[in-house]
Length: 123
Image 1: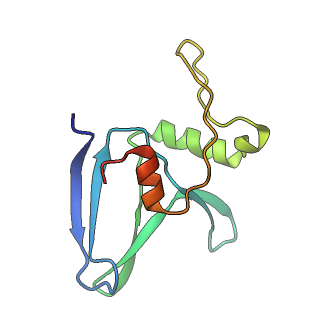
Image 2 (image 1 turned 90 degrees about the vertical axis):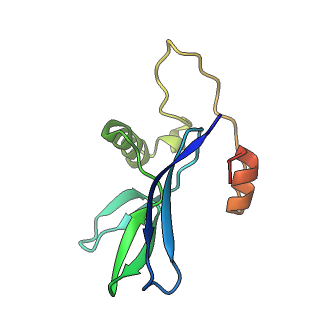
């Protein structure tokens, strides 16, 4: 069974380090890195980690992950803004009609290779 499919490809011949960007739709549970950033006006906000690449002399930023649902993105940002994990709740799963097992305690991965091997990702 295919667990991922191609979405898009872009190239950056002008960038010194980033030469290509490919988005894949991955159909398995996954971990997504969110970072807290400071806006130029001083406000703080949560965002998915991103990668920068230069095109025509101008730096562009691309999110490392994207949700298909604005509702999911709003729920994730509320979870992060409310710092729910500090209150002992590890997930925003609230539908009691579905079976639910506690979120396992994972050690912090030290590399992307370690994450891929733990999650049996297809890369």
